[in-house]
Image (cartoon, rainbow, N blue to C red; front, top):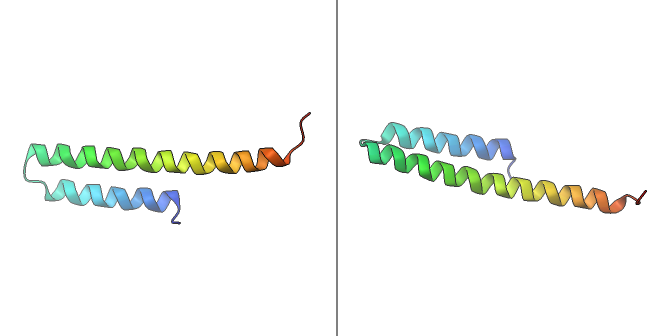
Length: 64
């Protein structure tokens, strides 16, 4: 799996290219909404992976 930072950079490159390519106001908005959805999906995945890591470490520790 690619790192979170690399994935963010990738979707930002796609967004910037789509904005430059846009000829209408609606095309710019569509690029934004697509970009936002990609960001939300990526963040959700990233946080899920981090929570799994936290739970894995937490389960190895004893209760005090």
